[in-house]
Length: 171
Image (cartoon, rainbow, N blue to C red; front, side):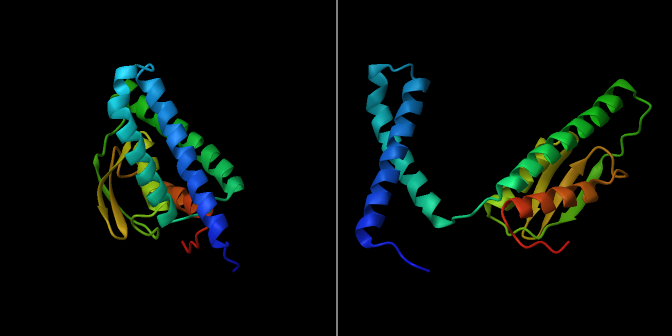
């Protein structure tokens, strides 16, 4: 692996910091309607946000597979529609059973990684499911129907997320 010369690395770092400052400044301007009085708070907030953003972005780089991103988006939209229809049926037809409960889902994604965070957030966004506990290698899900194939659906979601982040996945 070839490393960057120090001058190029320093120049790229400064460019990255300046772009972040500019983006956060634009965001601040939009949020405050460009009020001049807000900049006394805004400038320090922008500098702190830029610094934190820069430090964290260099801590754990990852690569996305953009074809898998498209697959993930389509899968997630389909799952959301399917789950939303199921929840709507249960609301509109009270005779449909509610088997509320907790389902334990083992995960292979490493805790604290963007892939693991995306899995948790995606499950929370799907109608009828909610992550109630996060452990090192498992998630506890609150579901509307414990008889539904929740584990299989969560597994399919995890597989797509692993592909999205180009991670090995053995399930």
